[in-house]
Length: 217
Image 1 (cartoon, one colour):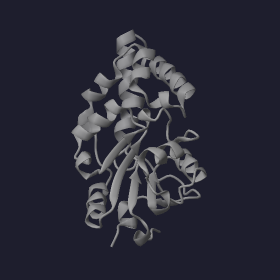
Image 2: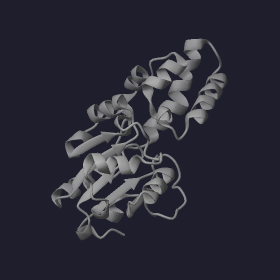
Image 3: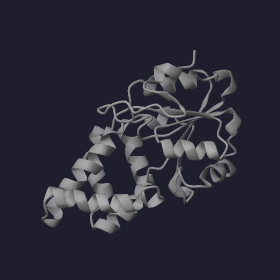
Image 4: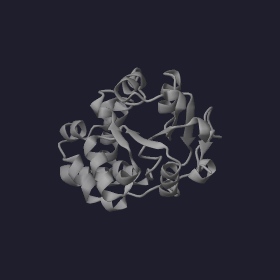
């Protein structure tokens, strides 16, 4: 699936790729609605409906990932709430072994995440992820999400990454399709971003469930 002799750099998504998406799903679909309901004195069902409406209106934009935007929109410090459940941040199975193996084979590891800088910092503290990264990039510093047109051209101009010798791994089909459209040839989709949920159907991209499937040897 991967010709490692042709790869110098590995571009890695964070949530759902290196880290288990269960944390984020729990926070946004269970914990935040419950806290919103308590804060405003409404039912859990009403809170869930309100937050879903806002989420649907933002989906695909950078604001969908922006804690500052969410905090202002709902009148609750979302970053503070995320800290309350940071103990649930977990690596996906095999992620640390995969990162360790990439280092042993001399590959550069660059994190490219849509996560807000506050979330990125929280997760670097809550895990050992930071020690495995040569560079870390939040898309908020570029003003575009990974699935937005023009992001990958902008990212290449900023970093100088040679996409022809780079592998990009992400769980989002929309992100991978945008990357392919902007010239990234080596793409892999993680098919089980949340380890408590079922494996997603295969797409047009090579897919993996566990990093052992593509471990350099």
